[in-house]
Image (cartoon, rainbow, N blue to C red; front, side):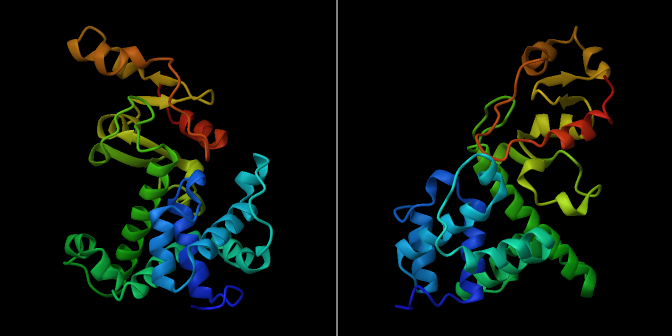
Length: 256
């Protein structure tokens, strides 16, 4: 077993990858994903749990909430956190590549469905597309765990029906693409309605309906799927709540 004080950069990065995907309450040595990663990188369950709590210690979101995490080991994880802050897309993709390597796979082998979808692309275009899709997959895992695998509007908890949507659209702000405060977990119906500007969420986390949608109020579907949610609060997550400046940005595009 490797010594716990001699962590490699790769080991720290894959623990950070797990930190992105686990709920705060699961940063524990008894969590199955912690045990699995510990075995993969030749560390003890306790050592991996400690590093996860080190990342919680340097996470500004938890600092704002008054959650201290684990300070011992901060110097080892802080450079990884800062690297993520400065270049989220590169480090997120690298973390998936390193994790795949520990699993004796390539990223392409780990995500065959992505490679299949992009099979007609070549060269740099394909490399960039694969990176984007892999990062979107990680973002989805981050958002679904943040919202406890439930649609923030309807409460639907069937993963196959859930989408990790962006408040500020993916193409509009590169820096915030992988920020969990820029994400919403919605079922396919409400994600589509949100993307098309038929519904919106205000800075009090309440659902708004557009004039176009309200014009359908006489239709049978309206009250069941939309009307009953108007001015109701979404299910706000305990961590990484939607950032109000992002919600304000989206409100600016909305047809009230």
